[in-house]
Length: 225
Length: 225
DNA sequence: TCTTAAATGATAGCAATACTATTATTTTTG
DNA sequence: CAAAAATAATAGTATTGCTATCATTTAAGA
Image (tube, rainbow over all chains, first blue to last red; front, side):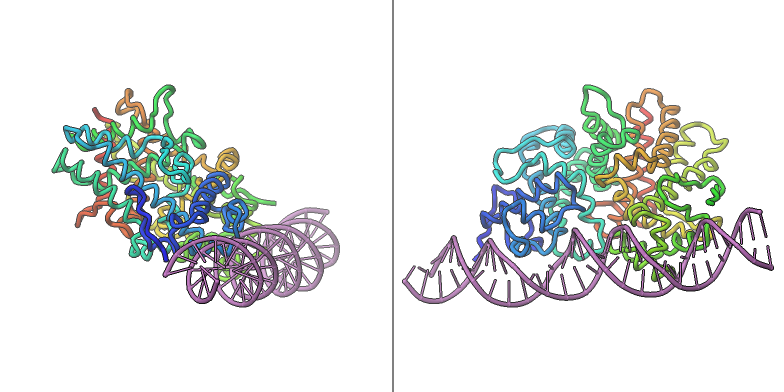
């Protein structure tokens, strides 16, 4: 029997996995092992065979948890969104005015990640690297529509929805809240990647986190006035 | 011997291919065939074997033009950037003030593509779909740094540079011109994709091209004031 | 026009990948 | 402690990504 472990509010849609990796020691080893390995060699070179070897199990066992490596990436990214949403609650609680809440939300979305001690088997910093480098591959696939139907992007959509609500609070007449937020989120991933590999496509100013400053400034300029 | 065909200013860096596909009839068939096939089945399912079949040639012959399918995608995307840069010259020629030139440039970057009769073997509309759905895969790879060194992203970087120059003309004190432009370009791809598959992440208002309106409005708000 | 080189086609083959299946062994749990 | 569930061990298959070989066509130079 499978127990549903609802880990302090960070909870991933069951449609994504075959067997909940939080429900067993091997499952957690698969998750932590895949974060290590994928961060190191990238999604394309990542295989279940290599994962099994590095996590001390077999290919067949990994397949009992995830249909394929694409679903596993989906799981990692969905976990990341769930984790962000969970933290969003704390970051915005009792903050007034709405404009300040918006600022803090955007900072949460785009800032470089710090380790969160609560989840022993998840290295959040490496997971953030994976999200930056691979998360677009999660929806840029011919199966988007099907995966959307099974709720694979629920967590992402809800996060964007929540922050769009704050945008509307700040300026109810602003026409493109979802577009603005999803552009900033995806954009921050690209910009972090560009800063490392294609500096000609970004602006890195010494001594500041340019991505965060740019994101907050852009959102506020677009929404207010 | 290979002739270099510099097709009305749309010219791709030679480091990307083994043999210039513009230099032979088979080469052009490979390009047009790959645009058709890749648009239909997506980059991941696309293989040289399938391409050869649909273009009436053999796998081995395709390999004489491109090292692998990744390089072929690189070529298609680089061609697209070169084509955009070529059109940018016309769109901005003799336009004053700089703010109007910026507006038109952004429109060119983010608008849905129309067919250009000049290039018989290239379907620009389908190519734009490929760029929207697959172009991030071109740099989100462990080989970015190497490919950057061989000039694979030259065309993209130069396009962003040119428009950043216009931004600086409009407002010399604006701190993040490259970030702004590359965010808007990549963002427009995402938003077009979201509009089709994940509408919850975007805002589609009937009777308008929301992506273009949002992009122009955002750039002007960020740059001016 | 003949000769030679270059480009293409036809075919084969190989290592790696993405799975599936089978059976043996261990672990869990009622 | 028995039965069921989970995992390990191993094997196998179709597809992919790529290389190699050699025959044939096409183009180019003398």
